[in-house]
Amino acid sequence: MHFCPFIAIFSRRLGHFRPWRHVFFLAWLYLSTLGFGLTPVAHAASGNASPISPEAGIQRAIAQRVLALIGYTRWPVAHDAYRICIVGNRQHTALLQEQGIEGQGGYRLLFRLYPEFEPPSDDCEVLYLGSMSRERGESILKLWQGKPVLTIGEEEDCSGSLMFCLAVKGDNVGMLLNLDAVSRAGVKVNANVLKLFGRKKGGE
Image (tube, rainbow, N blue to C red; front, side, top):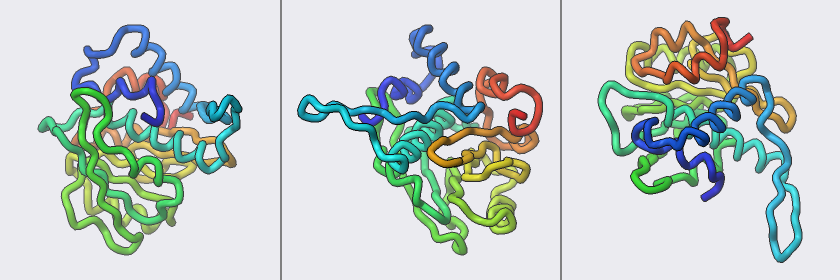
C-alpha cells in the first residue's frame, strides 16, 4: 500500500472507522485545506532514509486527497467499483492511476483516460480534470451538470464549477471547496468534511 493509514477511507461506511482514526484523518484533511499536508517523506531502504522527490510527493498528496474524497462521498446508488475519468494533463496522477483494490472490503477503481479535447464518453462516478484553461474545463463540466459525479480538478482559486480543487504550488498541494458546486451536485459529501472548509466558497 502506498499511503497507509489512509486506506481506512475505503470502508463502505464511515462507521467502520475507529474513532481515533476518523479524527486523525479529518485533522489531516483540514490541514490540506490550508495548503499543508505535503512534506518530504523518508523511506527506509537498506538502512538508509532518503526523501522522495517533489513530484513524487505531489503525486502522493493528490492520490491521497482524491481517494479521501471518494471515501467521504455518497452516490444515489452504491457502487462496488468507481469509474474515474481523468481528462487532460496527467502529470500529477501517475500514482493515483496505480490504485486498484485498496484494503479488505474496498472499492475497485477503474480509470478512463481522455485527452483535453475529448470529453469523456463513458459514465463516470468521478471526473478529474488535469491542469487546463478555465474555459476548457467549464465546457467539459457543463456536460456533467446534474449528474451524480464527484468533480475534482487542478485549479488554484476554485471559482468555477468544480466541487473540489487541488492547488499545486511549488511542492505543496492545497485543497479548496466550491460550496455552490457541491450544493448543485448529484452526490452527497459528508457534512464533517464540508465543515472543515467553513461556509465561504473555496474555504477562504
